[in-house]
Image (cartoon, rainbow, N blue to C red; front, side, top):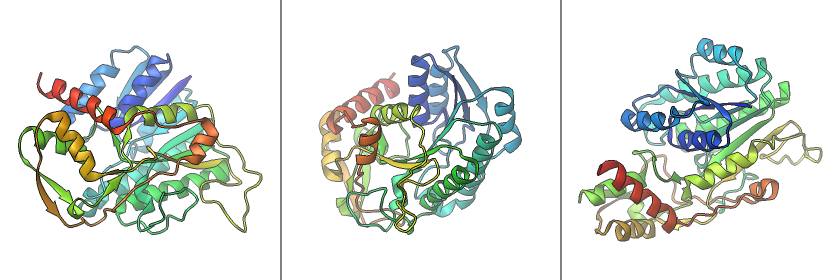
Length: 335
């Protein structure tokens, strides 16, 4: 089996690719290695992956249709896992073009390649941010997500719509995964938990928005990877009971499915920070600030569909996950 993983040098892509390689699966990795955050970190992830002979890597952007198609033309790819995207809610406010190129143009190129080269299953990253102004807690894939509050969220919602169109027109099985605040070793430095750790260690002030009154469904990276692995051989099929008069947004008459993948247990942000303080052995210096544009007060994943379909349930507590992260952080940066 050959699996194409886009964003292979990214946080989730790295951990997923490492797991696939450990299972003797051939992985073709694609990443543009952009400078949104520390490229050295991406290079260090990549060095680990390149030690495995079953891994091939191409430095390229999925918005480059010609180069992307050449990979599909030269190899028989059964499954595509699209994790390449311009990430970041706040960054999208000032840099919209990068989101259009990667998250929209790039995703259409992926869909077209899946169509032209008969890919058996496309799994792609969506985001919990699509819930936007929705205040129904926990967030359910059966809820409407028509009111995004950031351009990043809008591009992820667009991905889901485009995927459904290709599932409908060309019978391509597509699975969208709405990730909920993924954290862990080798993570993204722009994420709050990462910058909190760095600044607490260095005794710098951390910025906490909405005056700390926030809850997040923090999900450990190993749990995310486990969920994806379980879905590889479970492509969506036609839902014969799908009701056009009362449509379920998470499913379809076409081979299309949307899942939440989260911890199903939101944590108060201040409790999260307190856990970090205890693990680091220092108190945080905190500057409390109002809510930022594009942010939301709470995330909470209803994962009942994912549990029912593939038996997924998260296995890592926040205390366990943060312990792994802090240990990795100290080893990586204190070497």
